[in-house]
Length: 69
View 1: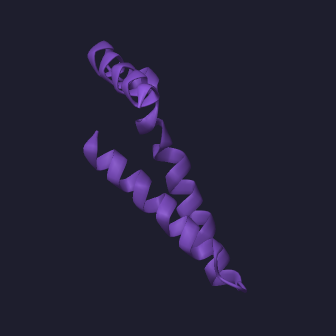
View 2 (view 1 turned 180 degrees about the vertical axis):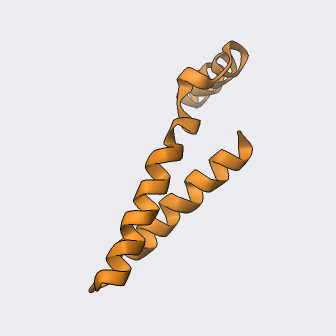
């Protein structure tokens, strides 16, 4: 799961970096598409549906605590 999260995050960062180019050619557009494709494949790693009940409870408690602050 951790490796999938790293791969997804890396793809998102690469997409963002390539998207900031002032101009693109066929090669850079291909890099953008590849990075987006990899992000879309692995994005489910951040889905709360996959989180355990314990992880969801901890996340909810943290959210409530941050809301109070």
